[in-house]
Image (cartoon, rainbow, N blue to C red; front, top):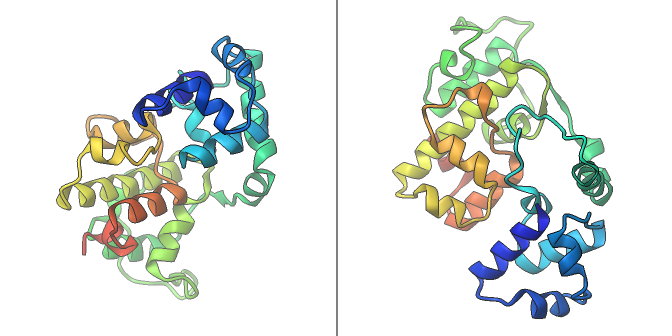
Length: 234
């Protein structure tokens, strides 16, 4: 719920909610409506996100049924989704479909990250290391660019989603090698549930969500590490 995330951010920064609302140029009367679950318009979302330095979707953390992507028939839940889409139509419209990757591309990624292809795509098993003429690896993207492209797409099947999660788990492992803990990553104000799930190795990849491009850039900037290190540990 927006109100709970707003109060949480105020507490973390030692701010009082009512003066904070006034500082953002908003009416304190909004507070009671937010507490009762009223929808928040796109202008308010953007003001709050900019003020606290967090992504807009941070205010909608902690919803139940997250891993199954179930949408409640609750009017407020649907309205919140609407306002996120209204605030960022360009992002929604530009999301590319993530459906499959050639064996050559998968081999390239696995070699770059130092893992087995079967780890990235257990449903598919191992690929041949030979590159067929009709399945050459991407010629126009560097390895890092290709990784970001994969994480930035909307997965349209379980195999692609699993690959995104496994890539994210390698990022987590490299952060741990760098001495960063779950708490350190949560302090960057990424998705709390998603981050906790990625640190929990007992959960199946199909049960959790992966990092996205914004998460990767936020982590790199927050910890002053290169994207290459996040993906490879080098």
